[in-house]
Image (cartoon, rainbow, N blue to C red; front, side, top):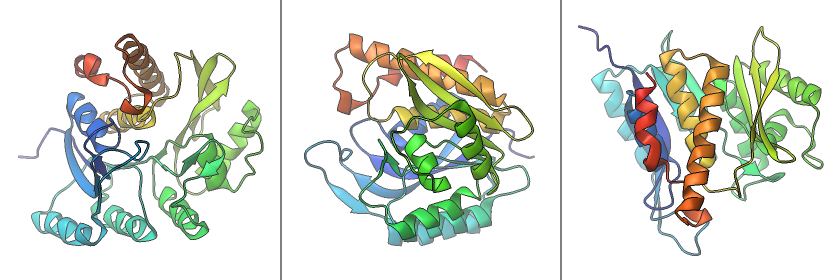
Length: 278
């Protein structure tokens, strides 16, 4: 009998402390009643916003790891990728998508490349080009404003654009292949907005009141909810609203518990709510 539970491959690094990447994605996706299957790109003791950390690169181990999944004949309803640390890792992920994407598989790519108008130090021009090729293989993309500018080769300037300009950039990005895009973290005064693009529908912006300072891992939390909803067929705009509301709720609770910004958000406090929504 065909397995009736949804299954998702999650390709990201594992940080033991700090609530980001796999330590966010695995529990969130599992809570939303989807089997979460990790492909580890690297291991960190804690993420790099802390003053010191242990790091172990898994790039050379990834092909053999994945080869054994091929031998098992695994099939996935979703493939979700996050931060990738090298050109080689991006190539491995592109191969993974080619090998495991079926007719109904949703590919969700969170192009973690930079923030505040700058690419991360690990991102060379070559890597940016390779990420554009990976983004073209996605069904859903979740870039922030910086990443949107990098992917579309648009000058960031002051990082403030009109709705029409966001729509134009989303159209340009969609022309590469993706049919759904959410532009995250658009700051509009006391509001945080997300630009929603769906092929064949009008571009629109969903806003929520800002709840406090930026915290590590909130993008991973947001994208993980979007990814899980994608494979269950949830309406895209509804998913964006749910993800934004959940992140805000977790930020407020984290402030109440006096959790440091680097420690991310205490999504564990509300994790059960995600499972009850289905």
